[in-house]
Length: 359
Image (cartoon, rainbow, N blue to C red; front, side):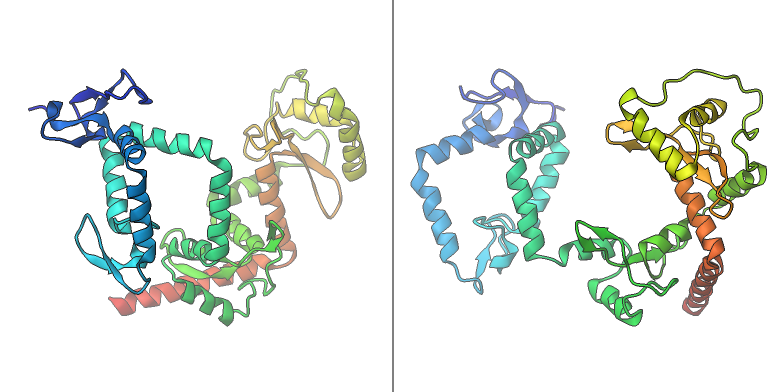
């Protein structure tokens, strides 16, 4: 038996964007007298034709919709249920839930066409979309917070209550958030257990990253192995049986600035850096992988890792491993590792007790 998805038809309109191309009959309105039981024009061409033929009709419909008071109800043309005006998009006679279901059905029936429409609209209306997003954020400042807390099973009221209980300070370091984005201080991050998916508390961005380091067994193992085998020397035996290779590490335009940074921050020369890079074969000394993060359009150089106490250089690390190691050493120096462990243990015990009570 042939389904609607298998039936194809060509739009008869001369101005159709997909002229002389077979389309699924789902893109045509139903019509008893038409071929295959559908209209001669596709839906988009038919709507354009009707608006051009009867422009006053749509203006009257729009005026009639605007004249309806906000407190009155409107009957949805699809589900036939009376709902308040706020349940409808501006100027539409189809309620929001029915419109959402309709779009989902269209995307499921003909995803290529619908995705093509969306991509074309985004491409042709970049500035309009930016203004819409900006206006939406100004009119609904709680929308981003609502979407954020929803990922963790919380409501805005619960999040705000937690902020008040913690005096808007991090649960671990007892300091206010300092990280900024677009000139505004970020809100406190929601910390949760990745195994149980249960929320533990609100922490600052820095402590949230450090918790991730201490809870990741793979990262802790790499750090311990790296610190155990590295000697405070420019030429530590990181990779056995290495052979010198010649690589163009830095462009000529950046050579002067890079030399200045290396001399000022690490008291080393560019030739020494290149020799270390060749010895490590361009790989991170901790994870054994090449650098992937980018600075602009180019891949970043390996970072110079050094001991903050003695100032001696240890090896070259990728940006990610350098951040992880820095967070680890900062926690050890400031006893934050103990606070993080106590914090994690406290909430793990609370969750276990809650599970026993619920059982």
